[in-house]
Image (cartoon, rainbow, N blue to C red; front, top):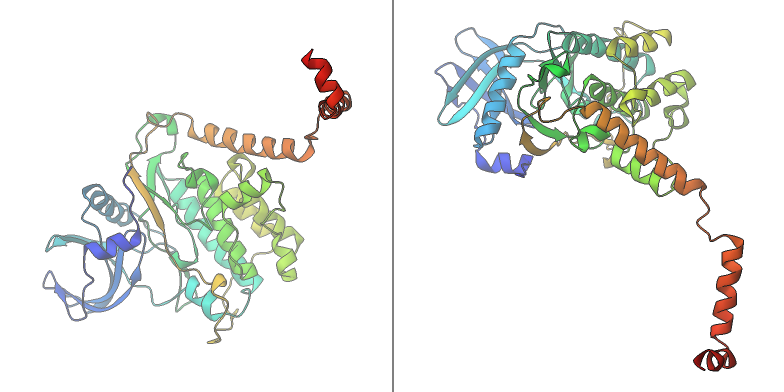
Length: 382
């Protein structure tokens, strides 16, 4: 099983330097950062005279190269205000690139780094409403798209206050009916704090996987603290330790009991216990009060904060693998069964008295006492 990580990508292909010109058209201005599947630059389109974002694959692996091209083609077909537009794809010098709309502004990981504490509740709910509208658009297409990497690092706030969902490097395209068996190959990967258990365990993902990731992201924004990863939560249940996922309102009272319950449902370990769709998730949030979001300001502070509050944006790419119904029959049911078994075992460990019955205990004690008596040993020896 091949293993890939972001550091291997960077070592494979060197980053571009400022003033590099590609296709006699795109001049590199600066390196913006690395995502799960490549490096991103700010560049200028010399032909049209406007700023663009240019993404470069940082791997020479053939299958991951194909996935990079699929990402470009997938994004080129999308048309939604929360999603960036892709305008070009090309290869040059044994490297692949695609060009997309440049979004001026900071990503939420940077804002969390600069913001001392939780972000305003109404602002986060307004952003969530916009993101859920985008997920409804993605999940309801004839070939539904599951993003599979929603996290603060992949969410950018434009200069107009609009939120934008970036980086479709781990996205999966599949028919609405999973029985059709026509899913595109995809890279299997996850970001631990925001990925659901079924994605970490590679048991298959669904639109409810995006619901978990969005719930975990909102939890981080509303509390200022990263949520515990799904594996830690499962391990705590089995070992009878306290649930590491504290209700959001216990960390930040401004969240409120109702909104905290919504986040808990979105982050349920069992996919069947989450919201059935992005539409249902959005309706629940609107019941707690939806605001436009414009005119709400958040404090940007240069004061350093605890590093545990800062999203690094690193994505662990586990392996490449084709995702198809033929390969994974009933993955959703398998995932639910796996989590139910973990839960059942945890409850069993918690309530079952790991002791022998009283009679057996007395018999065991009598035998141990007798075995320690020399007269008893002599008698048995005869």
